[in-house]
Length: 397
Image 1: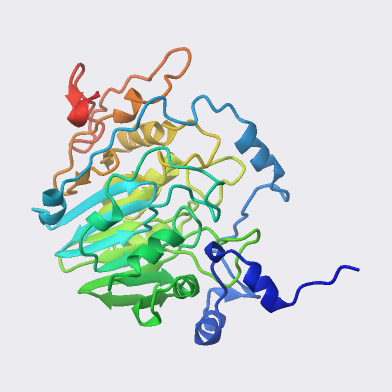
Image 2: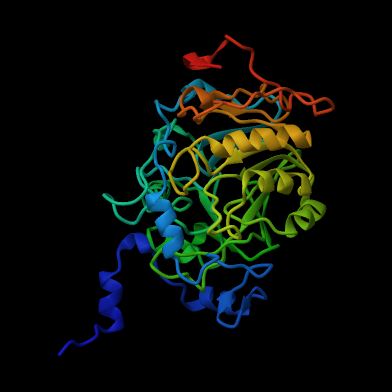
């Protein structure tokens, strides 16, 4: 006769990386949220996690699709900032440094904000399983220097990494997270007094910055099932002189225009443009949708994120960047597409370099599409690299 394990025993068997569930005062806040309906947090518009009732078609596409173009053909070129570069303040007061995937260091009006930091080798609850990095992190965590706040968009492994959180918990930085996600952080050693949890449209003042959790179209889950008690969010970080937007993970929805109207315009938007699929079109944006959302938000410079670091979808490795560059060119959007670790000041972004082409598998047939600038685009948008030049760190244009 097989007997079921009691709840306490099951919790002991739960891997630490799964986190834990909200209780007490945290749970009371969740139950009182206007976004918590019929036992779960709800998206701003009706949303399906998968288009099929079964996850099998999407899993089959992910594991059986042609993998020859799903990873880079050579080492991804990194810019490894020196200690002097990291210590020097941005001349304009705002600098973004994409560390890979959704991890971005934002230096804004004298403060330093790290968003969705994932320094682990795999985005998985298990050390030997799950998607592995396609390139190293450009900067060791210990070399980043002082951080005023760490912002988390939601609890998926490619955005919330237990090992990274435990390392950052040793400092005195504040963590800003959506409702419920603070339970994971406390479970991993972050003191409750250093956790700020916000519902959509709620704001908090941290280190002279205004942090606002804004709606997104996604879900939370660290185990085999969706987590009904944990919220997901996009984020606005505003200082006295500058403001930026980070999408986290999201499908496209009309709410971007409202965010732009209420909290924009933005000096820069960091937009998810990778890991999309026809099997989950409502929870991840395509590159074209990312460009459209950037326009809805009234963003000045678009920084594409959520691509190039982990193989999470059937599309080719470089396709998100290629499609974003094409869509930005057509829309007249100013695009900054740096290599991992390369700092960008939105006030003076570098000319676009198609650096990923040098390390990607060349598409069969016609090869790379031509990239001619379109008349009437914003200055710098769609500006191609000069033929025959070599970019920094020896990467051919």
